[in-house]
Image 1 (cartoon, one colour):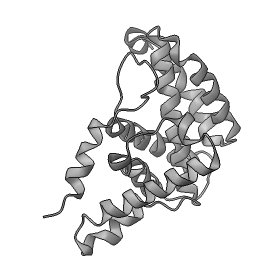
Image 2 (spheres, rainbow, N blue to C red):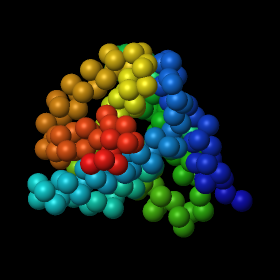
Image 3 (tube, helix red, strand yellow):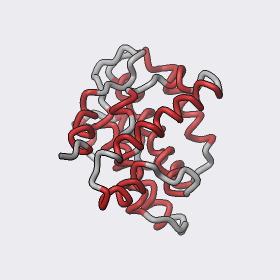
Length: 193
């Protein structure tokens, strides 16, 4: 018996934004799906519009599994995770151990294939796209919360917006310009366009 997929299924119980009052809870399973969709979009834009070379499929797989270690560690709030290098380094080691523990829950003949996804190449262009998509997902969460009248996310939105533009990624700027305005519309306004 192997528990890899049973553990991943528990991602739906790990709540994000634990220090923030949210109008709607978000878990790491739904977050991972959104990041995968955004990473796919950014990768396609990067290759089709800006003619960069990267593996679109690998980008999506990295995104799909980018939070899986949190099924064991929980979602540590960003202000704590990045408080200083020592805490960030210790948490990174904890995430690595959790990823190894998850991979040990697979039959040996599958470990190699899944290891590529669970332990992504953090130096790759594909991973950088996933990190941008992850930040983009947080930005969309802020927009959603503010749109529903929750000012708790105002400062986070401003900070994340600066971080997104500081990445200097043309594919990300393209997405921000062409797709983010739609997130500010009501359903009726989207249907009227």
